[in-house]
Amino acid sequence: MNAQSPDTARLLPWTGTGGKPCYVVGNGSGHVSRTADKVEAVQLGMALELLDHADDLLEDDRSTEVQLRHVAAALTHSLRDVHRIARSRGLRLGMPDGCDEGGHPAGGGPVRLRP
Image 1 (cartoon, one colour):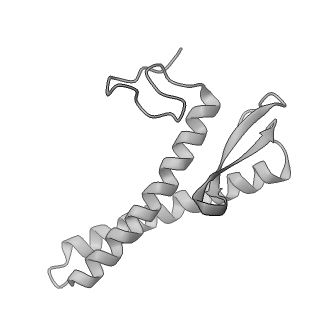
Image 2: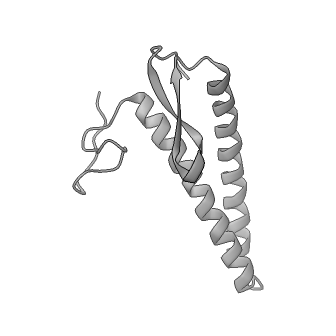
């Protein structure tokens, strides 16, 4: 990641008590930021492995309902992680035009990245 200003808040790839978002304030070079980078890398790697596993299950006619429900639950969990990483990185790049404060499309219109 590029160095940030010392007062930049970064959304971390984990949640706090009650599922609330966690942030670190700094320039992106501290211990918590480095740990967050490592956690994000692990989460993204696990998501890719999970996608491969899901593809295998879907191609296998012998996959059971229980197996498919389990992989669907795992994919849901992984997608939440990947979404949080994308939001964090997007917020650090600058809020896209057409997004609300949470980084979600406002009013259902198209999202345009700022130059």
